[in-house]
Image (cartoon, rainbow, N blue to C red; front, side, top):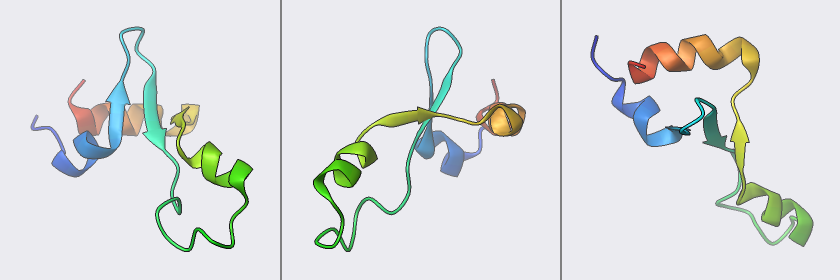
Length: 61
């Protein structure tokens, strides 16, 4: 099965098998957002357990 290129750009698989993603809404309308909120947009977060199998399928892993 081919890799879903849109998913490949948005998700990263770690060496231990975790799937990471970035949070949405962190690239525009930043003046109204607090420094703490903007800082948290920079982090990578784990994909929810319920979505993990779907994302793995899209990544061809």
